[in-house]
Image 1 (cartoon, one colour):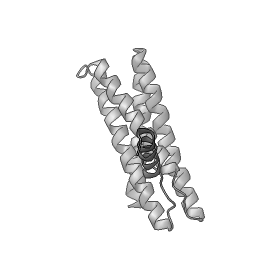
Image 2 (image 1 turned 120 degrees about the vertical axis):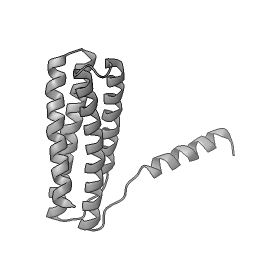
Image 3 (image 1 turned 60 degrees about the vertical axis):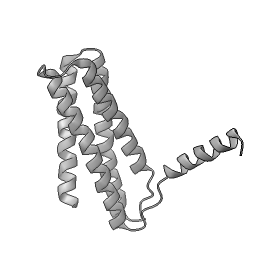
Length: 148
């Protein structure tokens, strides 16, 4: 097999392994939603901890920027994976999808705005975005408690 053929096979394998199929039952979809919310909560809480540490002088800005950028990248991946799941044909699944997707979107928006504020050394916006992330973390945590 030549080099191009090998690269094509590995690329296709990578693309296919990233594909997520349908959730055939509401229970399976709920499990995937809980998993996405839990993973998102971890990223949001990491960002809040980093931003709080920066604001209190316990963390340097360059390192905080790396942590926030990685959390943003990871949350984007979580949202893309969740959004690629085909929910079952039910109103409950549609409501679940909307709820989780809204929380993921809110978290991602706040992380993006936090990253921008950090790079601009805009302490006021860093505080506001960190508070917004706390709110998102509370929502994600409540979702987990209510649906576990």
